[in-house]
Length: 130
Image 1: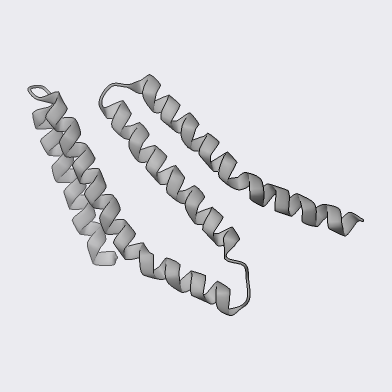
Image 2 (image 1 turned 90 degrees about the vertical axis):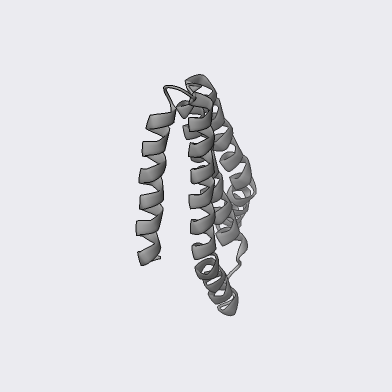
């Protein structure tokens, strides 16, 4: 990933320059170029972090630790990243209010994802008290 970071940063810099050039004449193309570059960056990053995530999951399973907590954490992080990506795209297109709604939806999704985990911790705590 160390060498890839410079490729990613270069892609971001070139994309930003291209968007600055395109925005005055073809704002819709600037948004499309920005979103496409963002998706490329996300795919590069996902391809690089997939094997470390699998290794962590395998280690957790080897030690007999439930991986459901790790899965919930990964899903929450994923929701956060996707939400930020979408909200930033909305802001880039001038839709600030829509970006705020996307962020609210992401926060609600993380909360709903964590409810079973919260209930599990609560049941464990109550079990210790009794």
